[in-house]
Amino acid sequence: MYIGIDAGTSGIKAALVDEDQRVLATRTEPLTSQSPHVGWSEQAPEAWWCALLAAIDALRDSHPRAVAAVRGIGLSGQQHGAVLLDGGGRVLRPCILWNDVRASAECAVFEQRFPDSRAVTGNIAMPGFTAPKLLWVARHEPEVFRATRHVLLPKAWLRYRLTGEMIEEMSDASGTLWLDVGRRQWSEAALAATGLSLEMMPALCEGTDRAGVLRRELVERWGMDVPPVLAGGAGDNAAGAVGLGAVRPGDAFVSLGTSGVVWATTDRFRPGPRAAIHAFCHAVPGMWHQMGVTLSAASSLAWWASVVGRSEAELLGELPEVVARPSGLLFLPYLSGERTPHNDAGIRGAFIGLERSTSRAQMTQAVLEGVAFSLRDALDGLAGAGSVLEQADVIGGGSRSATWLGILASVMGIRLHRLAHGEQGGAFGAARLARLAVTGEDVAAVCLPPERVETIAPDDALQAAYGAVLPRYRALYPALADFAAVP
Image (cartoon, rainbow, N blue to C red):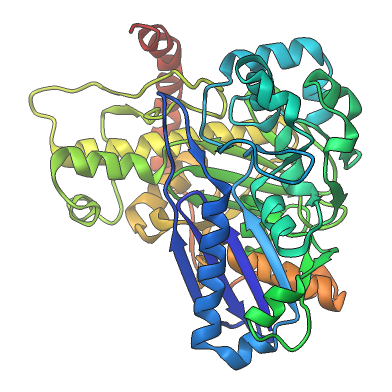
């Protein structure tokens, strides 16, 4: 038996998985974030700990014999957060989260101090990453910075509470801007640019490695037969990839969740910072991945549904299952800024081409198309960084819409595969990593992909029509960039 723990922004999820990789039970404990100022996003690490204890307590209560037989625990979690500890391991301030943008100015400072940053870390400095957050703390909370002796990411802090060990794995460490991603080791130059040293960093391991043993008092609390091993684990996207079996070079998927992701697994470090492509270590040894991100994917449809007072299902029901032509409108899905390819937290969205005869259904179709064009930007960014995709699995809530998948396949020009069980999430991937840490099995033998139940191919005529619209979509960003600067 294995437990996978996914420490997300909105909740802590624990999944109990058996030897046949069946999910026997899950439990999610909700979390809330605090925003004391505009653009800030914080959480108290102690709230994560209480939620984690409650989640596993619930699994113990419902499945005591299975929990007693647990041999390994895997951790997945939200990336980029900064947990600052003093010399005694005490938390010095609330964790600054991945979606906090207060450190925008510090990004330029970091890259000025470390000119090789993009080549070494594989990424543009963005305010969501960890390093700029520490520069912000040094500037605005110098007493906290002076007291800091250790910096941990969210799931590494949970590991510390579970085991007493300060250890981090490669995929999560890649999102700090302190990792030499190609060499899979901390970069002393990157740390020095932030006023930190190697001694302040956790030890590094692979996601499949053994990385601590559960504390005795927790073993007794949960009635476990032996102290389970903790796996290195994975950042949230890498854990999702492990759960999908995207562990071999060329494996790819598109996620139509709240945000949108185009992922490609690679067997080497391939940075693509010019198009804001992320290049991270994978959670499995000897593998890396590239990732393009659009910040508002399914959340764009949710926003539109809230504006018109209809459910998302109702809006999608007004469209044909297969659209015959583009909507005639353009929607820019920059509701929360944009990551790939613009790296612009200030850009905002728009509808273009409205007229008196425009219908709600046209506007809904335009929303779906706008997200698809944004993911096409990510796809082309991956191609420019060396990963040319011809097909991809598709996951996320948006993947349940046949209309949206048809639009997406024709806009992106690739085959998309709908999966039988593509919604397992990070907790399931973390449980797979726990198994690998315990058994030492071959990664490919354990991380099998779900069954593909449907393939959606581009429609030739629709692909050509969207190809004609794509340059118009891309030409709008510079005009919007000027508009976004108006207070």
